[in-house]
Image 1: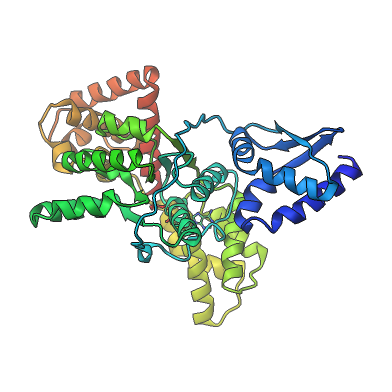
Image 2: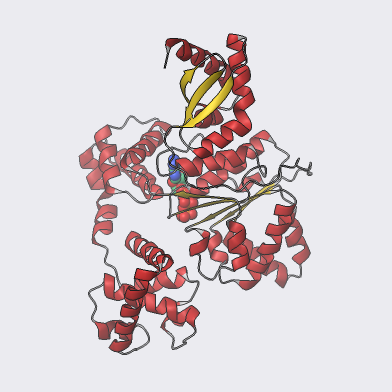
Length: 447
Ligand SMILES: Nc1ncnc2c1ncn2[C@@H]1O[C@H](COP(=O)(O)OP(=O)(O)OP(=O)(O)O)[C@@H](O)[C@H]1O
C-alpha cells in the first residue's frame, strides 16, 4: 500500500468510525484492506463475498463520502475478494419498508449479557457472527429467515439474543420475541387446552422479529409444525424477520416436514463449529477481564487444552477455578486448576459409551421414545433409527452381538449383524446418512 493511500485510508476510517456502532465498524469496515488507487478508483480488499455484498449494499456511499471529505474528490470503489472462505449464496428477498407496529417489547426474555460486544469472534463462528449482525442491522431486508446451527454450547443462543437486543437498541418500539421451540410448543398445547388459540396466534403473528431457539425439537410434532408453518408464512409475507437456531442444518433434521425444511433454506444458513485453541484462549481471557481478574496465561492454556468442544463448559471451568481459588484462599495457578477441575476432566476422559447412552441420543435425535426404539414395530420411521442405534452400539462399545440384541428388545444377534451390515453399506453411498452418523457419534462422544 502506498503511503498516500495509507494516510488517506486512515483519515477515512476516523470519519467512518464516528458514523457507526463499534460492532458494525469492527465487523465490516475493519475487515477492509486498501489495495491500490489511481485517479478515479480505489481498490479495496475484503475477506469474502458475504462481506463484499454488505459493503456494496450498505456502506458504499458512506465510504465514498468519507473519502470525499478528506480528498474533496469522488472516487469509485472496487471491492476485491482477498480470500473467499464463504460458499453460501444467500437468497435476497424484496426490500419493503417496515410497518410501524405498536410497541410491545418483550425484552425481558433477552439476557443482557449476550450482546455482540461480548461475543468473541474466531474462525469457527466468524460467518455466523457476520450474518447475525447483518440481520440485526437491517431486519427483514436481506436474509430471511436466518438459520444458525451448531453443536451444544457454541454460542447460538448468545447470537440470537445479541440480534434481538441490537434491534431493540436501535428501535425500542420493535416487537421482538425470543422463545425456545419447547416453550412455543407448550404455549400452543396450553392454548388449545384453554381454547385460546386466537390469542396464541395473535401473539406470534404480530411480531416484528421472531427468534426461535432449538427449532429441531418441533420435528415430529405435527400440530406444532402446522401452527409454525402458518406463523412463518404470515411473518415472512409481512416482511418480518425470522431467526432460527438448531443443532443441525435443515436437511439433517429428521421428520421435519418438507414444506418447513424448504422454508428454512430460503434465507441464509450459517454454522458455528467448535472453537479453535486461540479462540478458546480469547474467550477465557475476555471472561477473566470481565471479572477483573489477572490470570496467568499458563492457567488459561491449561483449561483451553482440556475443554475443547463446548464454550459453556469452558466458561464453567473458569468460574469453578475462580470460586475454588477464592474459597481456599490459594493463588490461581496451573496446579490449582488441576486440583479444581480434576472431577470435570477425569469424568470427560473416562466416561464410557454405553448402549443406553446410544439409545438415548438416537431416540431423541429422531424424536422417538426409547420404548419405541426397542419395540417390535417395523415402520421405517422407527426401524431405521433402530438399525442406526444397533450399528453404533456395535461400532462404539465392546458389547457382544447377543448382548446388543438383548438390549434392543431381545432381538437375535443375526438382526444386529444385518443392521450393522446394512448401515455400513449405505453410508458408502448416502452422504446424508454418513453426515447423520458422524453427527450422532459426535453427540455420543460429547456426553
Ligand atoms: N464466541 C463467544 N464469545 C463469548 N462467549 C461465548 C461465545 N460463544 C458462546 N459463548 C458463551 O458460551 C455459553 C453457551 O453459549 P450458548 O448458550 O449461546 O450456546 P448454544 O449454542 O445456544 O447452546 P445449546 O445448544 O445448549 O442451546 C454462553 O454463556 C455464551 O455467552
